Length: 95
Image (tube, helix red, strand yellow):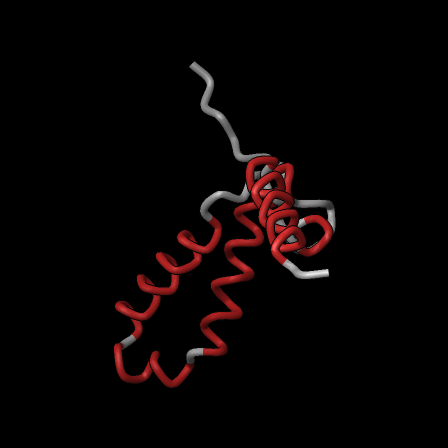
C-alpha cells in the first residue's frame, strides 16, 4: 500500500482564519498569558477561537482574509422576523 503524502495542498480557509484569529487574541490578551501560564492560555485561546468560528462555513470565506463581505448573512427566518417587527412598530406609531 502506498502512503499518502501531504503534498502542496492549500490549507482550508476556515482553518487559516481560525489560526489568524487565535494569533490576534493572543496578542490582545498578553497580560492574561502571564497569569495563567503558557499551556492553559494556549488551550483557552484555541477553545475560544473554535467557539467564535462555530456556524461559519467555508462558503462564507472569500479568497481574501476573513468572511465574505465582512459578515455572515442573516437567515431568511431572521429577516422575516425583522420585517414583521418593523411593520408592527410602524402600525403602532400614531399618525
